[in-house]
View (cartoon, rainbow, N blue to C red):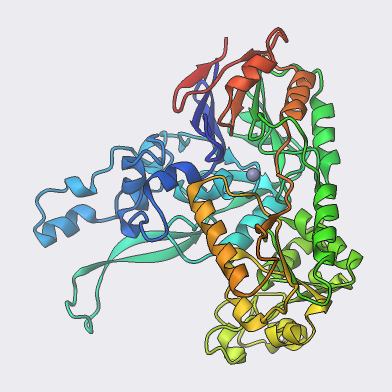
Length: 534
Ligand SMILES: [Zn+2]
C-alpha cells in the first residue's frame, strides 16, 4: 500500500518535501527550504544558531520531525556527554533532540530509513534542506541540476545550511595552548563530500526497491525535471515546477504527451499559478524589454534578472542585439555559464562565445582594481574558479583583461545593457548614469512585505540617480517559471491520474472545482498527514 506525505509544499508555494512510502521503502521527492516558514521566524539578522544544529529548525516546525534522515552532527556532537561532564553541566536538556539520526535508525543490514531523495530542480525551495540530511542518504537529480547546485554553493556566503555538496561536519575539539582558555571545548568543522548521483533523463534508475525516471521540463532554471516513480504496483508522477511558455516549452509538452492517457495512480502537481487565467510569455518579455531599453537612447540601460535564469539571459542577449547594445553580465552568471557549457548536453554557451556579451568587473576589497582584491572568489577575475598556485596555466584572468569596468560604461553608456541586480545597486555610484537612463526589473513583482520594502529601496536608488522618469514605477517585465491555471488543468486531464495531489500552491481547492466530474479524485494535502492510496 502506497502513501504520500507532504512535509512541505502543502498549501504553500515552495519548501517541497514529499515522502512516498511503500511498506518499508521510502523515497523523498525534493527536500527544499520553505521561504514562508523561515520568514515567519527569521530575517537577515535573526538566523538559526549555527552550532545549535537542527534543534532550532525542529523547534520552530521549519523542518519535520522524522526519525532516521538527519545528520548525526546536527543532532548531537560526538563526545557530547563526556564534554558536558567535564564542564560540570549536569542538565543536558539543552542539547537533547527529539528525533533520531540516520545512524540510529539504520537497520541491521545497513538499510536506511529513507532510500533516497530525488531533487526535481535547483531552486532553493526544492533542494536547500538536503544539507540537513545524512550524507549517506543517496541523492539523485539531473546532471545540469547537480552543476547548478554545486555552482550556487561555491558562490554562496558560508552560512549554516548552505552545505549541500560539501558537508561541513561539526565535532567537538579542544582549543590550543595559545588560546585564552587552553584545552576548553570548541566546535570545528571538517569537509565531507556528499555524493550526488547525476542521472540521465529517460533512463530508469533504482532508489532502494523503487524505480524512477526523470523527464526534462521547462522552468526558470536549467536542468528542471518531472519525476516518474514506480513502487511495487503503483505509478506516481511528480511535476516539480514547470511551464509551457519558456524557450524550452517543448520539453514540458513532451513530458505531458509522454504521460498522456497513462492514468498513473497518483499525480503530484504544482499549482503556483492555478488562479491565473492567462499564460505568461517569454517572447512578451523580449518585446517589452526591447521597447523599454530602446527608450534609453544615449543613456545607460540596466536590467535585473535572476542569475540562475539562463532563459532570461538568452532573452537579454536578444534585447541587446535588437537595440544595438552589448550585454554586460555579472561574473557570477559568467561562471555559471562556464560550468554549464562544459556538460555533455550543454544548455548554454559560455559568455565568451557570444559576440555581444561582456563581463562586468566590479570594484571590491581595496577598491583599486588590484588583482589581489579578487583571489577570494576567483570567478570575479576569469571564467574559472579552479585555481592552482603551483600551476600558473590554471589561473584565469579574462575578466580582468577584457571585462568592462564602471568607468568604461560611464564613458560610453549608450553602448551597453548592464545586468545589475538589486544587491548590486552600489554600482550606480560608480556608473553615474546620464539622464534618460533606464532600469528594468525582469524579475517577479513583489508579493510580500519584504519585497515591497526592497521595491521602495530600489525606487529611491533610481530617483537618486535620475534613472527612469520621475513618476515612473520601477518597471517589471517578467514571465513566470510556472504554467497558468488552464494549462495546468489541461495537463492534469491529459495525464488523467486516478488521484491528484496539488502542491506548491496557496489555492489547492481550485483544482477540486476545475476537475469536478473528470473522474480524477483530488486529495488536498495537510502538512505531515499521510494520504493513503485506496
Ligand atoms: Zn522552481
